Length: 121
Image 1: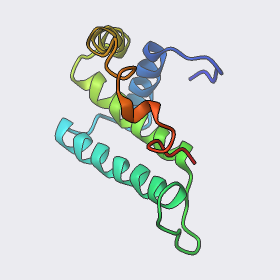
Image 2: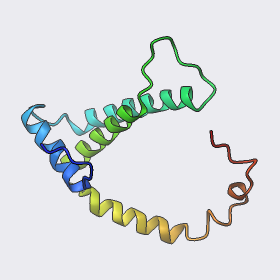
Image 3: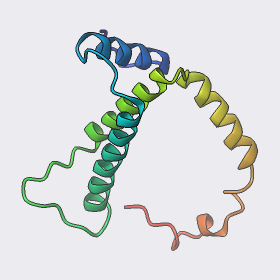
Image 4: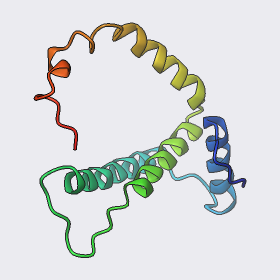
């Protein structure tokens, strides 16, 4: 398994598949992976609430957002692999859909043009 700074989605899918089949033994069921996806999403939400929201972190609490986002990417990739989805093709289709659907939507949204209504930390 290579370690490159630049990696394609196809390579991510290949590396996850290789790891699961060699080290992880086999894929968890799609339903189990969906539950893990929900669990990892909750971990990201916890970190966001503490780092960017109003909650404070508990003493010794791990707030490694990068690691939790990588966990999300991992399980999302596993689900794509086991359901036969090419994430590269799906991503291209999704960008095209959003580009067509939202060509002017966000630009014309007054909520996004008023600095007082958009809070960025």
